[in-house]
Length: 379
Image (cartoon, rainbow, N blue to C red; front, side, top):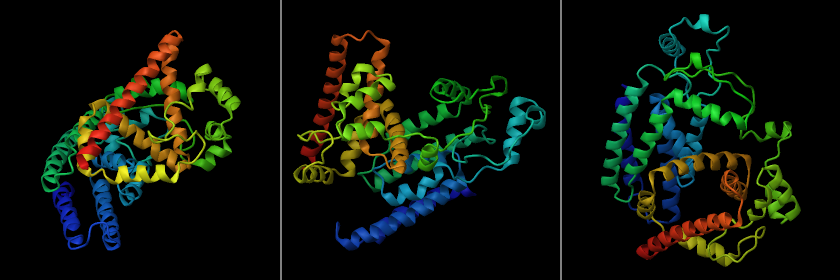
């Protein structure tokens, strides 16, 4: 019964936007106030829908809450799905574990906590029929997405949905998730996977206590500082930047941190550590205001499928760093570190580094060329 509410609810949200904003001058104070009200009202309805239907809808809600481009009413309301979603009934989970592992639950584990630590994922145990329901949900969302595009031509998200379906199919295979966990383990305290108690629908691993990554107070108690590199870059402390570069394993390539991905506009002449001028801010604001949903949709459709997965991951990282109060430079410069780290597997010749930087510059020109065409079309 719950799943039958999806179509009517989406339809109600669409009608709410159409009629609530009717007669109001676009961009006026009344329009903005009313739009914010509709955003919040709709976000609360969608949150209830995600919590009621779980599975695909929780994942979709997490994805939406991590995207900076969505209205803040949606991102703040749906953010609770990151780690506070309504958990599944334990008896359903118990049935899956015993069926897939072929043993009684208490003969496998000495202790089993029925309350999940974080109820925000498709998780480590799939409740019965999840894969079949996921396929039905994706078909329904595809239909709703096409209907929404017909009503609002500027909104085209079919390609995003296709890529989301691909990544969700991979996440439903817990054997693949176990491999991903083992690959990631080198970055953290070892969380051993119990392979003999892991199947496609059940993932069993060692429990490790720790802190939530965006709990700044807990990180501070653990003497973890996420701001050392940021401070060095803002203060232009070259000695500290090189020192931290050695700590991160980047070595002499740390000197390129201030060069790659500074977060400035393409026309900016400002050095790292200074604020953008008023003129730069105004030009940037004008450029952003000139972009409509049709422009964004067209640009998203032009991207390769794998890049959409990167955007999803980037959105989640941006959300976590935002909760920590980290400035944008921290995220961008970490990306630069990871890009340079890829050179560690190859001889560190100057010619290879030059070739790498040329590829980065070529990619930058392609992206900016695409944005210029979009701006020209809108003007």
